[in-house]
Image 1: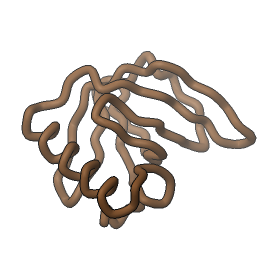
Image 2 (image 1 turned 180 degrees about the vertical axis):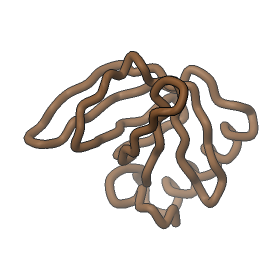
Image 3 (image 1 turned 180 degrees about the horizontal axis):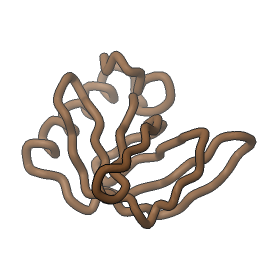
Length: 107
């Protein structure tokens, strides 16, 4: 699953969602960027755009990949509803929510 991070007013970066929860997610990218500029994170679940105010918690580099842990500081009630529905369905079907289960097809 891809996410688009808004950095500042009009600068964006596309990231890969590796793990997802109601409280935040693990993101990865090939490039390092200044997370202090991270304002908003947008991704789609079941065709619905989820917009979250995201707070970076940590950053780590493994081999050629950069990983960020972010918490969701703010989700709208509608975004929370669809995110919870998506997570529950993934857990029901597969027993977990990470890796290839977060494909761009969003099952």
